[in-house]
Amino acid sequence: MNRSLCQHYRCPEHYALFALTGPVSKEFGYFKVGEEVLYGRVHGGGAANSADHQLRDVLSECIDDAGTVYLPFDATEVVNDLRYEAYASSSAGWHPATSPTGRAYYFIRPLLPVWLRRHLQKIRLNGWRHLNFPAWPVDFTVDNVLKRLLLSSLQAQKLEEIPFIWFWPEGASSCAIMTHDVETSAGRDSCTALMDLDDAFGVKASFQIVPEERYEVPPSFLDVIRKRGFEINVQDLNHDGHLFREQEEFRARAVKINAYGRQFGAKGFRSAVLYRRQEWYDALQFSYDMSVPNVAHLDPQRGGCCTVMPYFVGDLVELPVTMTQDYSLFHILNDHSIDIWRWQAELIMAKHGLIHFIVHPDYITDKPSRATYENLLAYLKHLAKEKNIWMPLPREVASWWRERSQMRVVEVDGVWQIEGKGKERARIAYASEKDGQLVYSFESKSNLYKAPIPSNTTL
Image 1 (cartoon, rainbow, N blue to C red):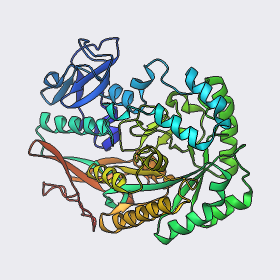
Image 2 (image 1 turned 90 degrees about the vertical axis):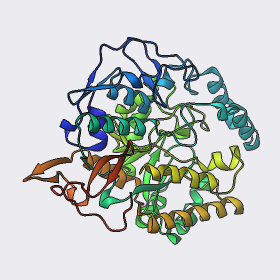
Image 3 (image 1 turned 180 degrees about the horizontal axis):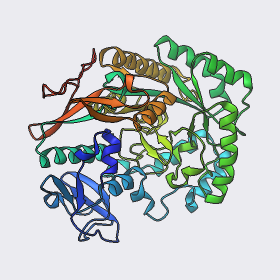
Image 4 (image 1 turned 90 degrees about the horizontal axis):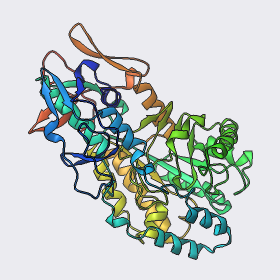
């Protein structure tokens, strides 16, 4: 019940006192807690089989008694059902790689001209604006639920504040990462020019390389990327769309993918087209994955993890893709401005989350697309300077999130301190209530617990 909250906030466990109202039903389905749509099992049943139905609201059933908050659902189970997309996998034919249409498309795809593929993709995505769950352009369901739970605990225990380990190092307000998926030989040959452009704006990125069939990957190409301070990751095996078609085939391919990871010195993995089955990730021997979108309305595989924060899938750190991909922006939405990207980034910064871009060297070769990307880089440079946004490489985010997961807030002689590797970069923050909402601060309301406020930090 308490695990997901303590993992997310890294707060002392005695501040997370939750219990079940009663046994939950065997059936999974959709229900609400206030305005938040959840998926899972609920006490008394009554969950709907579609998010579009009128949903049971269990907010009034969340009650506190003597400091413990009683819930009609298991909070950790519900959070994991969203993060791991259990709601999407419960639908028949949910995965494009296994559907008859998906199999047929990938069988004939090599014979189709680019213009026809784009036309078919638009037809496939038709109606995406009418999807209510997850919420586009960014879904915060997991983050909002966890925030509501911490507020409930604060109120139930009649506390003034709850200390926790801030989400990002050095008190950064949010985090932004740039990633480049290299899909063709033309994209590979454009990587040097793309690194020049990134460097001009002070941005370092990761390059996801397809190791087989798509193009040659000479050691000299990888050496240039490394020497310039960029990161190399493995992208799929051969980008044929079949990686997750069958579990036995996936595990056989995973052996080769892991070998390429060791050969490339790669810490991270991304699947082609953001296809995924998170329940199979135990076969991947990487530090982190970047294959799960926050909300996937514009991707071939619908769903989304409903969070803008990293989370663990087994031992893997998942860095969710939280921004619209460049391909979708240019060719599905027909937009060559950065307005949507700015909109999404502003929403994510308000939640102190991860701003995660995918920009392909293959798709920014023409002048309009290149100009759009330059505008984006200028915007990110502004955010880093003016908004205290941390802009590391993906591997640094995964390393931080792994270190943070092992840190603890402890009380020593009446003062809160952080224990664990990397604690010198961590900051204690305080969650308190203001006008019925949970708010964060780096300064304790109590004279007993004081923490230094990092410079250039605004919450």
